[in-house]
Length: 203
Image (cartoon, rainbow, N blue to C red; front, side, top):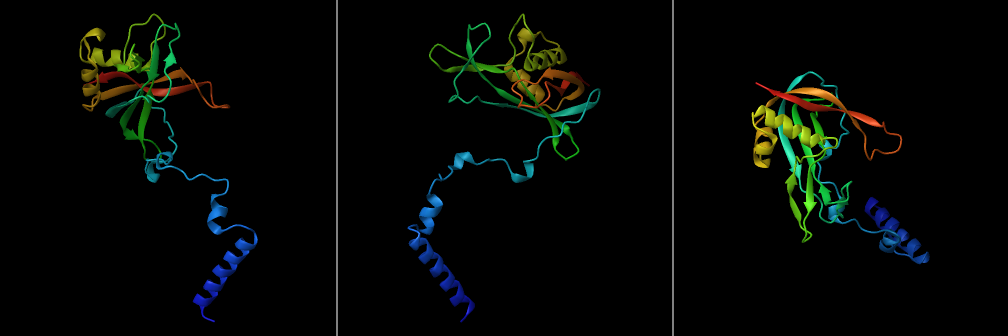
C-alpha cells in the first residue's frame, strides 16, 4: 500500500468515525463556535506587537518624531462631565519621540485630556486640546501651554492647526518625568505612573 493510499484510508476512517458519532468534521468545528469577523483582528504588524517598556528620560533632550490624534469612537456613548453640564468623547493623542527604548521601539506617551463635545444635534464638536478650567489641568492642556510658550503667543491665540503643525515639525524638547494617577488601571497595577512629558521646547 502506498503512502497516498494510507492517507486516503485514514481520512475515510475519520469521516466514518464522525458519522458514527452523528457529526461531520465541519459540524464538529462549528458547534459552539462563532467565526471571527475581520474587524476583530488586529491591524498592528506582529513585529510591533511588543509591550512598551518606558525608560526614565527625566532631564534629557529629545526630538518629537510625530504627534498623532485619533478620532473618537462615535459608537461609544458620550461621557458626562464632572459638573454634569456637558457630554464628551475622549480623544486619543500619541506623542512619539525619536529616541528608542531597550527593545528598539520609539519612546512614546499617550497624552490624555483632549475631547470632542457632544453638540445639541448629537454630533461631535471639533477636537478641544485646551480649555479654561479652575480645576486640575489635563496632560493635553499642559502640552498646549508649553507649545504656546515656545511660539511666544498666548494660549487663547494658539489654534489647533498651529498646535499640530508645531508638534510635527520635529521640535527639540527637554523632557521631565511627571507622576500621574493611574486611572482605569487593571487590578494589581500601580496607583500612579510616571510619564516622560515635554517640559520645554529648546532651540
